[in-house]
Image (cartoon, rainbow, N blue to C red; front, side, top):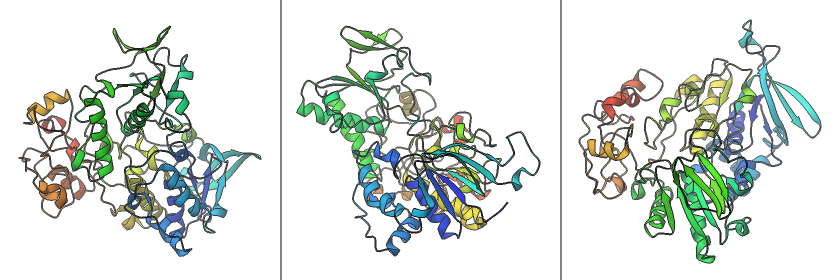
Length: 505
């Protein structure tokens, strides 16, 4: 492998540009290829949305060092930016730096990544030949050789459909002109489309929350605006989050606001609803789950998450989990089927590696179809990947990030309410899971502001009990897994033993 070749970074969003900064810090030469006509192109699609993580979590360390060397003044670390403010105040200044700008190509859409003169079948000397990255721009088609490839292209351009089976519901394609995906700007650019209309929001994550919140504000200005919310989960308890126990207070507050809108009747919620079919009628669009039908609506917003597009890496040997579509070793840490604790164990190059050495999927795309990605997670990923590419495996394996908890820490493998009962929760407990130790062990692991007044639970059955004092792990089994340098979280290895434990994820 020619180490004089660049490391190609696909995508010039926050994680892609952070990767470039870390590569430069390590003496490696990045080449950043961005399909859009500007940096942060995907973020611009939700520029109106205020983030629930403050600036302190949204600025990468290596990128900050480059910016500050040129006199850049960081925003207030406690402030909460919109997506557009992150682009304007952080990404654009970063891209304009002399260290980054000459290594950035805009309007360059990557079409395929392969090994030079090696398709995915060819074994001979495979690890010794460079990657070949094919891309298109306004001047035509190009191919560039690279010593490594970091795919930070994200997932925002490949939203999940409305259909509960993972494919478009019957009638979804035909009614595409009445459906928006993601987080439309209902208070701004697209106000006329939604004001005074009957609107259905489908989805149970923070994207859906933001749309519901904006629609509720719109209904105050245009009282004829009616809001329905359909979600697949049978209960709102876990969906609405950890409230005051969330270490990202705006994330917790958002869930509380949505709960209040439901309680007050502004939002009509239909839980346990699995969209199968859409039917156009004279009175509007009727959405059906078997024989169960929602009231007719005029517009639909689908906020059911995103999925990765692995087509551009199809000639490489990559290993993705069959469920989440995340890298194999990362999948057990983030699989929502296994746990709901928001504190995903920090991870890096080891968990992100593939059979073809030198290719890494990072950022939101690394999470596949799993939710709860934070920018800080992506920054830790690319710090570790840059260290690995530079040959510093001690730094690559080292964890330099502690993620904020959601305040929700309970595993649901079957019916959520039944799991609550088995775990010793009373059905009258105030929202949600008030005494749960959010690090899956003991309440002593919580920050003082959250631990104060929190009732300790019996966690002796929780994945072997709490971790030893001073050990950074969610429980004893997780500590054992980390000590053995095993991939994944030991907590998820025996779900049958976990299901009855109150505070295990």
